[in-house]
Length: 85
Image 1 (spheres, rainbow, N blue to C red):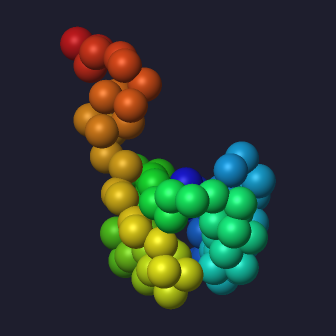
Image 2 (image 1 turned 90 degrees about the vertical axis):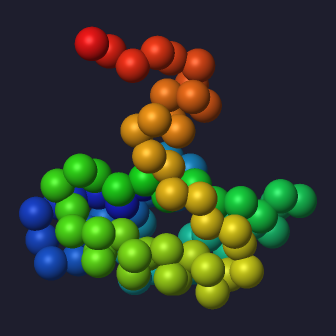
């Protein structure tokens, strides 16, 4: 999750642990060594410019992981919820 903290550099959350986005590559690498499946789901706060999320995606891709952008629709499907009306 890339979080809007109303500062120039947003925060990131890796497996429920908040890290500075410039440190996301190290955090992701530490998590990936424990897994066989190197897929990282990225979700950005709605208020963020996509450019900030794209920077984080670029960092994660350096780890060799496949990045999946977690849209609201995809998140609902993963959680098995129907959209609210």
